[in-house]
Image 1 (tube, rainbow, N blue to C red):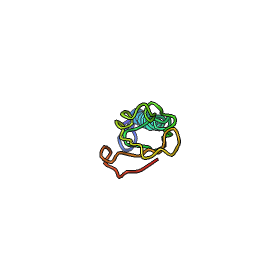
Image 2: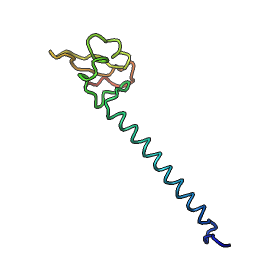
Image 3: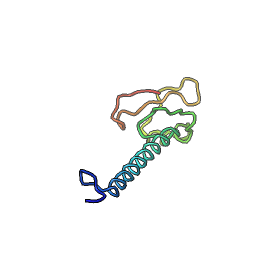
Image 4: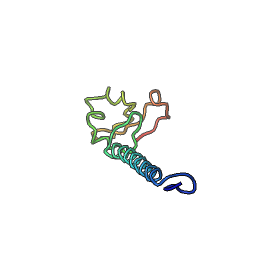
Amino acid sequence: MLGSEPNGITNRSWKMLTKMKIVLAAALMLGTAGEALARGAGAVMRCSLAGINTELHGAIFGKKHPDVAKAYGFVKLSDKGGKHGTWGLDASMCGHTLSSL
């Protein structure tokens, strides 16, 4: 058959398959990059203090909003003379053992 390769795939089919692979790879990279950017921007996730500077998130960790912090699964462990003190995860809400930041 003219225009076909030994395994039965035509040049046109081969080009389409290659383009589909490129599009799929690009979509996967964009999805992964978007997630990394969201987490890198300091997004506060429920029951996770990983990478969070509590001083930059006063709307959650500020003294005026204890219920907001509780809703995220955070509890204040101590106040060592600072503005915000030390925060940890509420084991009853997060299913973890109590850990601190």
